[in-house]
Length: 379
Image: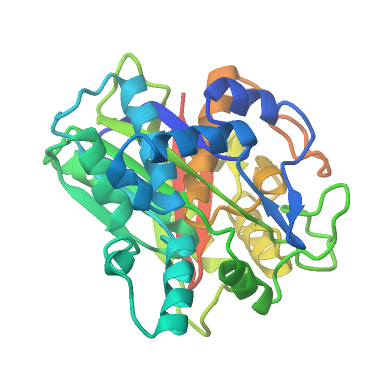
């Protein structure tokens, strides 16, 4: 990287809560946020967070027709911009993505179409993937570039890559990046079940993310959004610095292709490390979605890079499920909190030796098709 990028604020709304205090308190306990809804295991927002989203939805007549994926994004973007001290109409860029977009609205509109053979007026504008960034730009009244994209589960970290690129180029000096996802809908859950990767049993820890000894797939969907405020250079109010980025795409063999040895992760982590000695990495926040193939591939890639000196590994998916396009930024939030608090957040059913120091953390994400991203953070 030409120069470091400062993360000057981060905010989220997820099953962990809607404030940094709530999020940290939930990370400090060994209880997961997974429950059963209509016969399916899911990780939902708390009642308190749902109330906040409902209040936002009813605060503006135009917002009443928006999908939860957009409302989650607006809520967390407002909080992040306020924490960073960014003002309305500031010239900052926005890049927010989603894997699935307006899932609930799309399913509702499509069901209505099948019944009436006629589409409702707002069925198109309220279900486009560009909806999230556009409405956040409207809400914050920014004059900067407004970008949307979908790269499945690595969407949020690809947004961070793009924000870094804009800042490095000098075309912007501030960028809001992140992801938002509201996938707890019948069709979306059915899609994951059709792939045979969804958890079936409700036990002490129904999602066994990072457990390479599990005998069945245990992925569970969660909902939420997370945003980071990026600024060029070393800022005195920085929560953490981005000092390395990496990305790679595998050759597709099938629609959900990911090699046994996690080749895309090997390349993305190597690129993010740059000239830094692998021994200097203290923690890796893994992508590990709770599937047998996905988890083992990433672990194999980590072993390839770090050999017998593997950093401390952790994940948040056992606790909040897989939030698809938002998951990478929620992992970044977890990493930033560990850097700030200087405390390791462990996975309760995985034996891990806590690091002696917390100075460098790698965050991984990968989507269907092997689109891997690795972000290297430092204090």
